[in-house]
Image 1 (tube, rainbow, N blue to C red):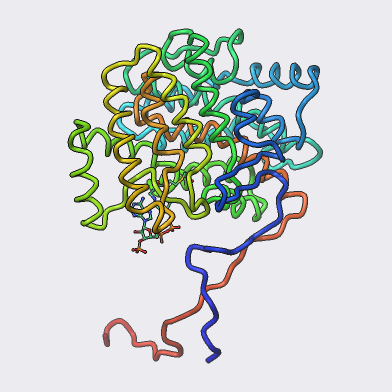
Image 2: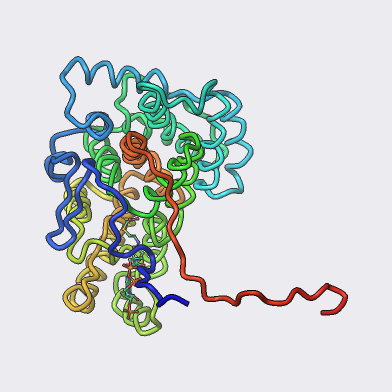
Length: 383
Ligand code: CMC
């Protein structure tokens, strides 16, 4: 037998490719999309422009932007069969399961799903980016037995999502909040879901298969599902005065505090800082008692965790910690948090697929075998 090689469990510390899409600096808490600092994009850009940037590698001219947003708007609506599927599933299935199934079904409406010629992949990504918010909003509506609301092409991408979900046209601040979440979730280098998307894409399976893989991977509470799990923890804490006791007991019981820690960031996640600052701003705009309570809990938990684990173990708040309270400012149900993550992250997944297929290589890692060899086969009747 050969000597056991070094095994990087969870692929920790392993580079799997080169990429010019985004850079995460985990030591200094910085993030850039195509060279632009996330703080700049969050303040000055919007989701449509960020998606163009991620997919095409540069910011659009005015005409390119207008053409791109027109295309996104034209592709928002869903085929009737997909609405029917969502209507059937939504009352009982988790919205992430609905999204995964509906996204998979989109393949039926592409008459050449495996075509990767020319701009085909980019066009398919644009269609997915356009339709996933409609799937998420329809899921939210049907879950509550409400009618489907068709897209409003007078609204921008993320404001339209909120409108399709709630039936209300968002004001300027609400539009900014939802767009902010779409921008911040759009891309984050080779995390678990993006890697899983690339594993599927590397087999030259179609983009719908890759997207379905990504949605399944994002669902887990250690990844995208942490936003819903963090809010559920805050609700379990209930009153801000219970926070310290709850966190103490959870840590003593070796439980994970959702919304903290990250494989790459060993300091404050820059996206969490941005969400936190907008949450504080929302306090100046007559927030509900629920939002005030959640923010109080979040701030006590944040301080405790930084004191206990931040400085010693590098466990700091990540974006998913403050995401829930911010979505609650907008009145969004917690089951829809991760579907919104999917709708935003499609831009990043798409950019990575486009990049990866320029120099495709089948993903096929190795594992170190620890079982037996050459066992004598015993027929069933003799066992
Ligand atoms: N609460 C308490 N302890 C933690 C936490 C946490 N949230 N995160 C890590 N630890 C501890 C862990 O118990 C372990 O302790 P020990 O060395 O004593 O066994 C140590 O830190 C290292 O943990 P690990 O799981 O080996 O480290 P990792 O790099 O694999 O963890 C993580 C990354 C995100 C899975 C983990 O921090 C975690 O479970 N966080 C909670 C879930 C979460 O918020 N996920 C969202 C991540 S950001 C958004 C996204 O990408 O989706």
